[in-house]
View 1: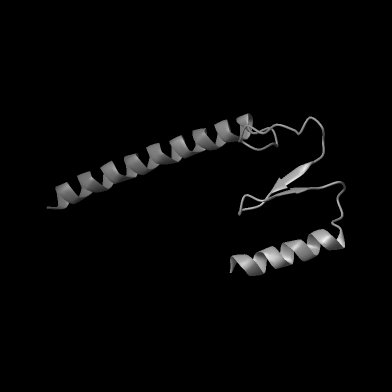
View 2: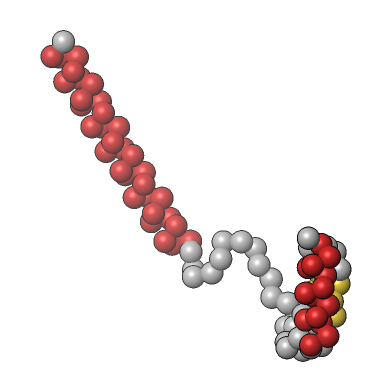
Length: 84
């Protein structure tokens, strides 16, 4: 029984050592591959501005500038009340 336990212990130790090596290698690869940007394939908006916003209810709102007008705010609030 003692020999089997020692054998299992050594096997477990070697498996843990191999896993530690693999984790170290993966960490090194991730550090080398990441250049500070997202992993996703992102593209910049070529016009650098948003012209239309599509809501979850598939309603489009044309945005002229970054600040919303009072009318758009009121429509948005009314639309949310209607959807509930």
